[in-house]
Amino acid sequence: QVQLVESGGGLVQAGGSLRLSCAASRGTFSSYAMGWFRQAPGKEREFLATISWSGDRTYYADSVKGRFTISRDNGKNAVYLQINSLKVQDTAVYYCAAGPSWKCDTRRSDEFNFWGQGTQVSVSS
Image 1 (cartoon, rainbow, N blue to C red):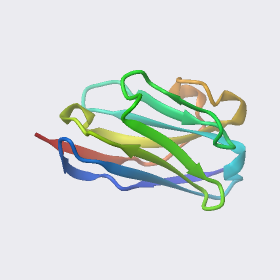
Image 2 (spheres, rainbow, N blue to C red):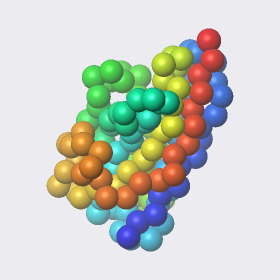
Image 3 (tube, rainbow, N blue to C red):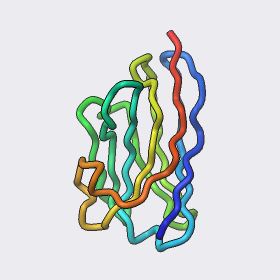
């Protein structure tokens, strides 16, 4: 099974940018669809974006479309989330997840099998 480790979070000012990374080990990374989710305190886990195993298809939540970009590098066993124009309401723990390749367009967190431990993103005003 694949193991996932996120990095790249931190404290940034509103309007700034961050690039989150998710490194995969074990398993066959290129066989998985990958997704990013986030969870703010007291809120449900929220879908952000998914990407197909080959990287040719991406899907975004309407709330982040245009500001967030998901990408992957199968040669490096990594998936990324570029976040631009950060807002205070983007403050959350961000998680990457791996799921079946045929579910690359799902927005349901329960359809992803493997999760990282999360990375904290805090945005100050």
